[in-house]
Amino acid sequence: MFLVGLTGGIASGKSTVVAMLQALGCAVIDADVIARQVVQPRFLAYRRIVHSFGPEILLETGEINREALGSIIFSQPEKRQLLNSITHPEIQKEILKQILKYFVLGYRYVILDIPLLFETNTLTKFMKHTVLVYCDPQTQLVRLMQRNGLTRAEAEARIAAQLPLDQKVKLASHVIDNSGDLETTRKQALKLHTSLEDSMDFLLVRLLALTAAAGVGSVVYFLLRHLVA
Ligand code: ADP
Image (cartoon, rainbow, N blue to C red; front, side, top):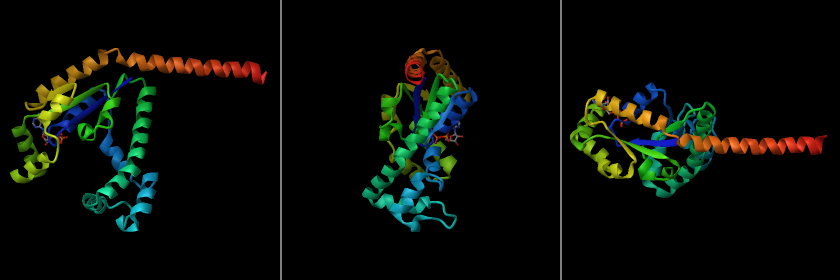
């Protein structure tokens, strides 16, 4: 099995392409969903956040007030670092659990949907391939204004806060151009899925896992024969 990092820019169509790939049967791990999940009350990160930031960042429901936390870390970089040091290990653990699940289920590859894949850049080294969902700047602006009901200036400010798509194109190993209609994008998603499914890259990890399992099996057999008998 191998990992494929999928990213985009705001309103470039990442969610649209993820839905298309899921409809084709792809395994997709959504980093945003996991990031929201690990700050829920039953998780370790929740307890650590409350311990470090105090109960005043809680809503009446007991859940973390994401807006309050957001404004604290926006104005205090050291608090952002503290929050990241709490949440990142938990997010990585959850991602790993899901990767293992898909590995056991026999998937040839898993897509990691990571909005800021190239901005944070910590996970790219684990990706066999990276995919950028691209659209041209004018289309991105119009789609963002329409989807979020924003003025041109507001939409431009949100786009400017990210690495420009033209720069991300240079960093990605595959690009899906979503500037056209949905059907044109669907064809590109299918082509990508077919080429990843046909790739033999998945075999290496399966062989390594098989070799490791055989090694463990031999040790257990040896112990049973020589120590237990
Ligand atoms: P992202 O997840 O990258 O922020 P979305 O997938 O939500 O972007 O797409 C942004 C908006 O553009 C949504 O309203 C979506 O329905 C619309 N959209 C996406 N792709 C197309 C397309 N090829 N043609 C027309 N509208 C599209």
